[in-house]
Amino acid sequence: MTCPAEPPYRIEPCLLDNPPLEIVDLVAELTVLTEELGARLHPDAASSLADMVRILNCYYSNLIEGHNTKPRDIERAGK
Image (cartoon, rainbow, N blue to C red; front, side, top):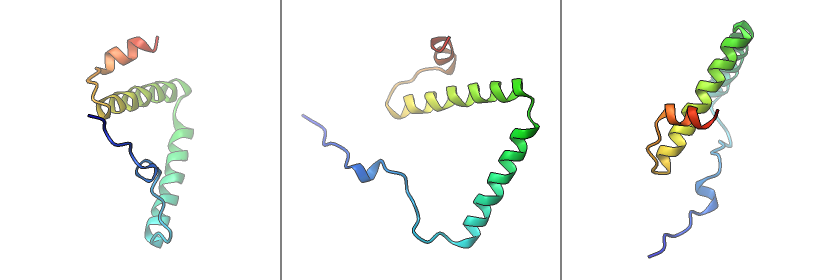
């Protein structure tokens, strides 16, 4: 039995044609705050945080694909 292929529109990003102004304002504010936080982080802390986020992204991607890989295994594989 073969699985039907996902249609392309199911994996494309969702873009709103006319987002509410409140959401646009919140996105702009979040962007500014994120940049301010990034500017305050020590380079070593920023690097460690980026590594951690990379591992978590990989972990959740693996879960979505049905693989139960532990973060420590992902970290070891990246070294």
